[in-house]
Image 1 (cartoon, each protein chain N blue to C red):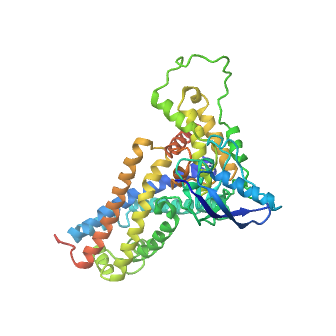
Image 2 (image 1 turned 135 degrees about the vertical axis):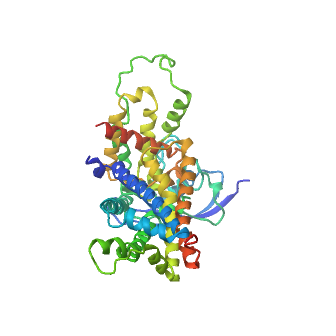
Image 3 (image 1 turned 30 degrees about the vertical axis):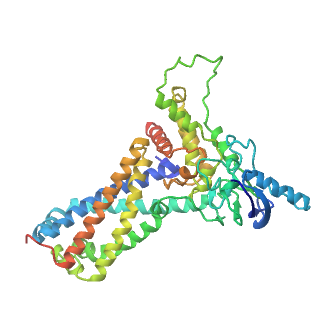
Length: 251
Length: 224
């Protein structure tokens, strides 16, 4: 049964990208375990407003685990202790009465902090702009069975496409590497015939952009896969390596 | 070919290939060591006639040395870049993500193995091939007897065993990770290459350790 719990939230406060940040601890009383983690932060912010203090800034949008905006590092895990969920899908029943919950922003050179818990993830948009698309004029939609695609390929492409680009992989990685994200975005096309046409250029451009933006070199620790809210497999990284090396050897 | 330096996957590719090459070398070295258990004369024949200061053995040594140098230099480059990419801000709630210990500590393990390698090269290679090559006095042609002398000291055996335990950890991550990086992996092969990696690291480490302990305890040259 869900109870009301008293907790302390230890939140990272930072005024701007260049400012020095620090932790601030806020006690919260009678938080329903049925509320979501973000609702708990809403309650905290409401309390701060009532006290005339500045609210805690954090990213969120759809609150149903599909937009990839929420991005909190909670008690040593990106998106908190639950597996396969985003921060917005995390509920307070995962915490107990008297807990102190540490909430931090993603920390990585590729994701500079904007304010408090909000980081700049536009680097991911730049990687997508470098080649994460197919450039064909689709016209009106053709019949789905016009191009036969093996079921396994379709499933794997869909699994890769489930990546919401939240950045938990980078946040979890000791190397600040964006390989899981880039590999998912390359794989979702590489597995399908429509994506094969530009596969070589895509792999090269997206990896080049990823390197240029200062993300690290993947060492296959597998931390990304463990923390990914969409359970993207690191075998996608092997596929990206394969695509990239094939493209380079063809040059 | 500049992508082998400029691109992250290119750098990792070099690191993987050099690593896999060094695994092949370790397999050869371990196999040759096993000869010590059976017969010193055969070992000395292999060491002097097949290897020794022959031109092919010198070229071979050079290639292996190059493999080590490339592997170490790229490890340093990759590690420094990764530290920079990670940024200077560390998490206060330290990472609770469950990952294999060895995968997080490849550089430290490698550094330890490298330090051991210097000791090992001084104790063995310098006394044999190097001295012979540069006409330094005291070059040893009785390699097997030299090995026996070195392994008669308990501290050498202990350092040796610890180094190969470190190598075991290094290889359990290194082998599958190298294949993963060259693109030879998928959901089906993931488990297979991990098991294969564990077998190879165990065979290599156990082979080296067994020979050292056997010599220390006097169970060598059994057919001699």
